[in-house]
Image 1 (cartoon, rainbow, N blue to C red):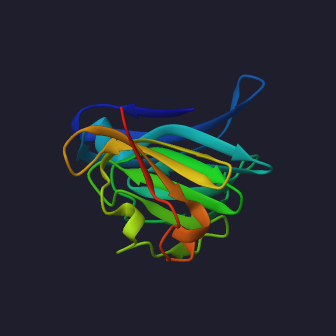
Image 2 (image 1 turned 45 degrees about the vertical axis):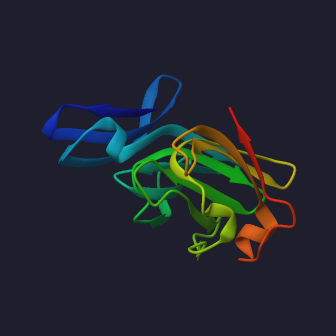
Length: 168
């Protein structure tokens, strides 16, 4: 369960894990002057024995049974979507950075300057399947769009063979 409680400088963000109706662990951040949009995604993703989430502009990987932090990566912006695909973690930031990519071991992969990301602004949602990352966002024309990104090309910082933009 992930919650944001309070307003202004009293805001607290937390992630809690429950089993049989009892709280097992909690990670809490704050207080800080924020809005809900600025500090957390609403998603906690579970992959095997680990949980992944964003809290206070940091992406976390924790042991799902103990809450022990395996790693955390900062500067993830106003994260509003987190997706796991293969060995990667993708986090979108509404205000920026628009996309943060890391491996499941916490290694950050620089995607700065990648040609596939040049038309992505204000990311709303991410989805990954079949080797592609679908980014719902505003494009450089201030229109809603879904941009298809080749994951292999992105993480290896090379151009995609056929970049695709679908306007909604």
